[in-house]
Amino acid sequence: MKKLLFLFALCFISTTVFASDIYKTQIESLNRVGRSVTWEIELTIDKKGKEEISGLLKVWGAGPCNGSQPIKGVLVNDNLTFKVSEHEVKGCGNNTFNGKLEPSAIIGKLFFNGKFHNVVFAKQ
View 1: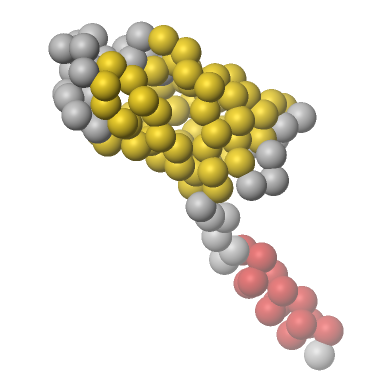
View 2: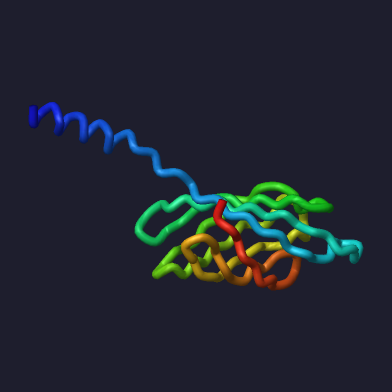
């Protein structure tokens, strides 16, 4: 019986899937022609190691900067830092983030569309 229980536990542990955490926010920012635009931003985070994270930053709004960009960063003592590669469309910027992981949100500064924005990414 102990062997059967051990084998069941081993199978359960080996098939456990670790889900990604998803967070969302909105930013008001000017587009390339100077009009105010509300950008919807979704952040998906996958923990890769003890401190290393990866994921996606998805952006929706008016203009050519819509789409998904892979992120890489670190999470140390609830402090999160990440950056994305330059978007395929020239001039959309190299987004970076520095902030703190809270139980239901990530709070910090996101460099987006040429300037820093105070953001609260709400956990979904």
